Image (cartoon, rainbow, N blue to C red):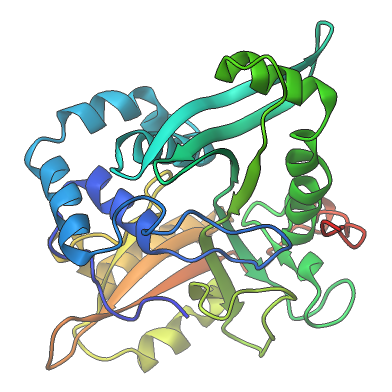
Length: 328
């Protein structure tokens, strides 16, 4: 389930809030590899240690801003990788050893290893592959109701099944090839291929259809973050069901991670006007964050994708991937 409350309220800087979101967000899937590094691995298990770490960045964000740099203007995946690089290089319990390590066969690139790091408590290096994903579930589609191929990206070109297959068949096995072992040994200064742990981090949000029921995809973690998606034609029905005083924000990439602060929200009528203009010309899917009013604190939130009534375009649907392989 998504965090129903905003536990990022103490932090104001957008990059610090995104780091805090990354630290708190579970993976979307449970696979045969270990998942994301948790706070204990990072040396941030205690709440006071986490508060000190984020508080220092909040007070002096310039090193974080400089490190993130131009990736804020690029693809969200690159921004997400850069956040992990900073986190593994600055957290008290880890050391970043390499990132985007190329694996070559003669002059041909076979791929890259996203991140290689070590925990201070364990000298064995860790290969970490990372991906951040936002998928919308289709009530009708390939396979059974819980098929991962039914979960597609907003643009209709990617699916949870395809991404999982790529990670489990290519990205993670790549580290065990002779070429990757050679690259790791050279990078880590060793004459022989090192022992290696592997992890896979895939945070994000799964958006369930507003107009139909759909089970979670196979291998989904029980606590994955959830949202809803709806056709523009159903907006008025949703609007009527929301409590008076609900406010929201239109989220633009790469700012899809942490929820916005309350002072950056606008009223539902303003959002509705913007959506009406956007979808008058068949606009692309839009992600919204809505903050529901309440008598207590903290407030409750929900994430939404609003899509054109003709979404998804049939000619852009991703092919169904074959069942991905888990490690032996």
